[in-house]
Length: 173
Image 1 (cartoon, rainbow, N blue to C red):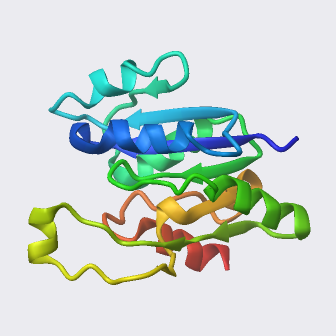
Image 2 (cartoon, helix red, strand yellow):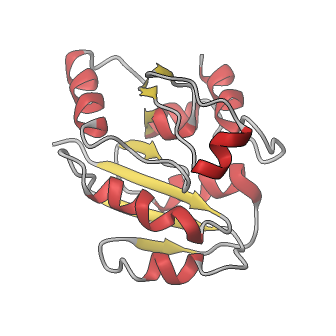
Image 3 (tube, rainbow, N blue to C red):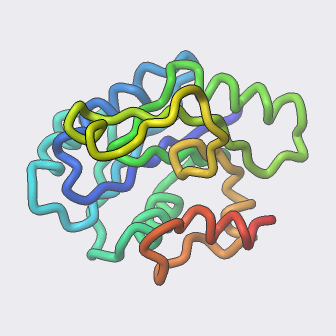
């Protein structure tokens, strides 16, 4: 059985972290481990993550930014497959199951993205257009990759503050 590590990198994500963790723990094909990498939060993020122990492991490195936190998360993970979830996103219950099926169908795959459905709080929905239906995903929360593929592409950019996954993807391709 292929081991999947679910990795959540977060800074000041107290408001949404519990829902994100619950969406990982509720997978029809649960990950072997869930790791939260907390990057210098000033809110109650750490308390939320700790409340899920021992099902969730909390890692607190020196502040490194999102790309650095993703690299720390990959280093801490033990799975052959790495699946990311941003703390303000949610996984559909079959997300990992469907990605594992894709890897099983084609063992040469290095990574698989899913589609994404946008959502927003009522306040944010007033400020932003929420596009309907599933959209092509190029987001961290839709990525599941082989550990070796992440390493071959050089990990995540520590100097990029936006689109770190797209920067990694450009190198991976």
